[in-house]
Length: 315
Image 1 (cartoon, one colour):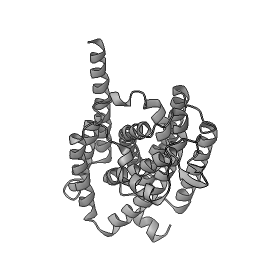
Image 2 (image 1 turned 90 degrees about the horizontal axis):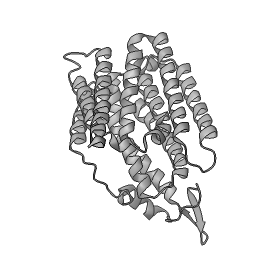
Image 3 (image 1 turned 30 degrees about the horizontal axis):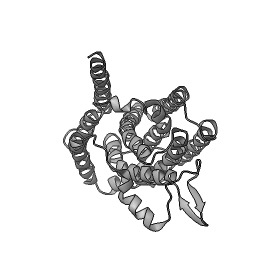
């Protein structure tokens, strides 16, 4: 293990390579089993796929904790839970994007697959960059902590009012750069009309999802570095959480809107880990405490949402 590896992660080079190869293999298996053709993913299949992704993540977490220590294992699990919960919130935006571009259910899985692939590449870049910055400049911790506290306040002030994603700045820029069409052509991202290659609504939806995830990464990357400063733990926990996002979408799509207390719960989580990061030089909160707090907030938000929805259904 060279000096740079020691600087940003305990993971040796072979583990980075093996993990990336494993991710590629899992993506190919996912595409071949669940992404063939143009058909709607059923709730049963999505639930099965989501369960497989979660099992893979927890199994890897258990092995990593055994190989590199319980503390890093706890950090991994905490980072995974944070990213998973933030991903669920991101499903609200994905639902809005698909609705705005009128993407049929049977084509959504193709867009989500490439959206996840793009998210993985972006996270890899930002996490390695963030790890290097933290290693070189300790004060970046305070910047990350401040971002999380501000994001927590923003989450509390956000409303669920619908916005027109078709007027997103990325859409205006894309339309200036290439011809577009409002007509869907199966599951194709591009279509040729009158000899001109044009981007379909499928490709436009993909671009908005990628831009949204780029903005989303501004919140999630500092969040994971609040629980660990190990680049591999941050990267692997993020990627394994993102890999299950597509399946999770089809599991939660019909009732994700009922999770009314998810956003306040996420605000509480981000505020906690932001404050934890700001106080790191005064008092270091143990990994197990962070995991307990994050898990407790998520369970409370989920049960509160379920209970209120049940009361409203009876009235």
